[in-house]
Image 1 (cartoon, helix red, strand yellow):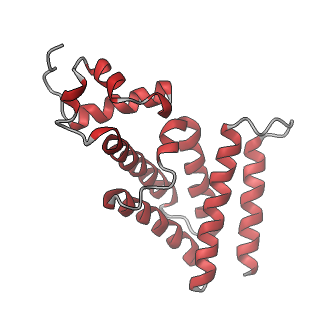
Image 2 (cartoon, helix red, strand yellow):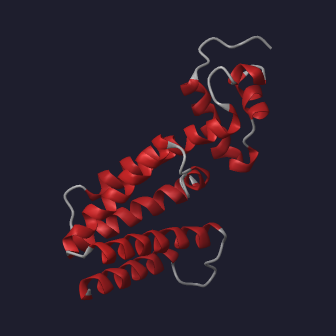
Image 3 (cartoon, one colour):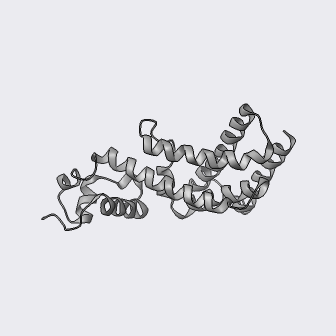
Length: 186
């Protein structure tokens, strides 16, 4: 196979995201990606730092998507409305792109770009929680709690853990209202 014209980091990332979207993160390999792009595997190393480097690029890309979506959803909102908008934006991202969502979990602490994006996501939550005038420690508890609620719910739903005859979205809303009620009493 001869190298395809236009091969660059962006085209590699786009193809890797398509692969992840259709086959899942576990199917991602440089060999499979090279075949999709019509190049030999070594050609990819001119643009990405191996499979781990590619996964870092994908994690950064997906975190930017989540950041954009959640930030946009909370514009002009405060308090409970902002929390619900943020949580539903995150949930819809996970439902629409489950493999991409997986790439956003537990970002690599050694990757500065990914950590910067993860920090920006936390800053959105801090801005949302400012409405409640929490002290530093309670703010950290609230950030961790909201993250755990959202991610736990997503994980259970992705694992088909909600088989009872009640709409999962109604349960998600109920859970958020319970969280918000607790914040209002703090």
